[in-house]
Every structure is written in structure tokens, then in C-alpha cells.
Length: 459
Image 1 (cartoon, rainbow, N blue to C red):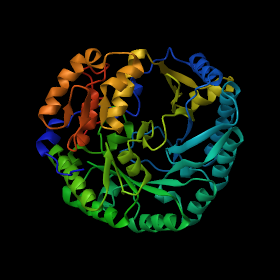
Image 2 (tube, helix red, strand yellow):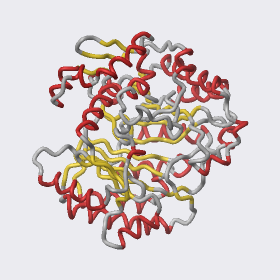
Image 3 (cartoon, rainbow, N blue to C red):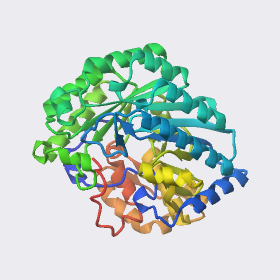
């Protein structure tokens, strides 16, 4: 894929939009979808003969210190006794899930996120994995990943994670510059990260990801270029490169960041352009929207082979899955439904104390939702849509059903971002960098929606 990118296009598409880890997006969930609706979805899956494969997500909300840029659901505490209580409630939630869902199902993908999952002690991590294995079968060859705060692990802890069955790690780095780290209250020396990545390789983890953020306070194109050169030397298997979204009215920790210290929009675009060039020259494939991988990594291989998928954790090599989500604020998917748990510990604990699942909102998808989800995910993952195949799968005439959307795509075609033929549309090499904007054309909920400030920028 060509890495040359038109900066005029970057400026044009520097607008808010969804990340499409789901469609419809989570901001469309409603409180009318609650515990009873979710149980019905579980029991329908249990009774069905064509159930999707299964994935697990477990949210561990705790962090010892606050990162000012963070928009995740987290609880800041140095009191590790809180995690012991939390695991007891996770066990209750699991028991309630399998009561309606059934025990012993195969799980091909599991992810621990947060917060900081490595806030848990080694014993607690062992207890959690044992708890999961009592209810589910973690299949050989599956993807089992965990988010790692480098400040909370040692090579010995990494060996423990590997023994527990985790085969993929994601290190939260964000930036190696000490000045930027201090400005966002996340100080972690580069030498520490390099040592941990080296240890992870020696231990035998199959894939190592590093998260980076551009647009943080006190970052400059020059300082972030230096971070990218360090990442190039580190050479992780995957890189997630996110644009910082400054939304202090929504995320209280961001109020500690001074707007005057943020790089200008022009500087952010320069950082992105530099990043694309540097990572391309370093041999990384652009997988799609924020994600890069070495050519031999499973994610890059899946992209080339047309097997890429997308779920609430981002891009994945695993087939389209139902997702059991555990823990405070966790979002799951069962069949044609989405659901989300309570966002605070008090609400989460209260629901489980009453003997019910902590579902507080969700959505039952309509036929149109399911169709548009299929189109958006085809664009996001394969970069193409076959009109006849999509029409046959959903019993529609694609060109007629999406006549308005296809007309709006003409602008993208004029800009060289995709081609639209009689029977298909295909994203171009340049278009992959703007795939969110292309996908947004098919988002019915955005049509006529002027309030997009709740989303991050698509570039």
C-alpha cells in the first residue's frame, strides 16, 4: 500500500466520527434494553443450532495513578483490597451468565482490558483465569491478550502471564518523551519498556503491541518523530497509533490538561503524516484505521487474505464472534443484540447482590441495522463491497437500497479514495487512510445528525 498521503485530504477529513467497533455505535444504546432482554438473547443463542464462535472480554477498572488523557472507565486507587472484592463479583456475574447460557463453550478469543489488568496480583490473575476456565474452554490456537501497564510488571510477571495462557500483550506507551510523560502524569522510562519487550520475546509471546498517542500536551512533530524512531528500534509486532481527543467536558481527567499546551491541528496532521512515512519505511503494513503490523504478523496476514474482522477491541483475525462481556461498563454482543454493564462499581455490585445481571442498556438490532453493519464492516475490514453478494445475503437490491449512499460516494471517487463500479465498490490505497469517512456514508444514524462532537476525530 502506498504511504504517500495528501495533506489537503488530511485537513478535509479532520472531523469527528465513530470508530465502528460496532454498528450501531454504543451512543445509540437504550435503557429499554436491560436484564430481561439480554437473558432472552442468551437463551436464544443456547437454543439455536447456528451459534457464532465465542469471545470473552473482561474489564478490570483499577489503576494506581491517573493518566490525564484517559477516557476509559477506571477507578484510581492504591488499595489493592478492592480488586479482591471485584473478583468475587466477577465470579457471581459468570455464574449468572452460564445459568442462562450454558457451561463449557469453546472460546477462541479473550481480552483483558481496563483500567490496568496488571493492577491484579499474580495470585488474583491466576484466580481469574481459573474462574474463566471452570466455565469456558479456552481452545488451543486462540488469541488470548492482556493490556499491560509497563509500570506494573516485571519479566517474572510476564512469565506468569504466559504460563496462564496469554499469548499476546499490549503495552501502553503513548510517548517516550519525558516532558510529555510528565505532562500527562504517566512517567515510564523508555529503557523499562525496551527491557520488558525483550523479555516478552524471550518468553515466547506470539504478538506484542505498543499503543501510541499523538496530539498530547507539549508534543511537537520533532519530539514525536523521536518517539517513532525509538518505536522503530523497539520493533513491536503491532502498533496502535491513536489521535488524542481532547473532550474535557466528557472526561474529567482531561481537565488537568492545559489547552494551550496542546499541539495545533496543523502540528497534529504533521505528526500523522510523519508517522505514516516512518512506519512505512520501517516495514510496517497499514492494517487500517490506527493499526499497523509487521508483514508476518497474523493481523497483516489476515488483511492480505481478506480475513480481517472488527469488534469492540478493534481489528481481529478471529471470525465474527458473539462476545460475552464481564465487569463494570463492559460491552457485549449476543446475536443481533448489544448490551452494556453498569458503569459504576456501586451499580454493578448492587445488581449482582440482587441476583441479576448488571445490564443497564443495550440495543436489539433491526434488519436495516444488520445490513448496514455488514456493509460498514466490509468497508472497514476488506475495503470492498460486492453488491450482488451483499444483496443476496440480506435479500435486497443493493444499488436501489443504497442509491443515496452510492451517489454520495461519488465525491470520494473524485478524490481518488475509492472506485464504484456497477457491481462493487473498492477502497483505494489512499482511501484506506480515510476508511472511517467512507464507512460513515452508510451510517443511517449520522444522516442528519449534527451533534458529532461526542466522537473522536477520524484522522
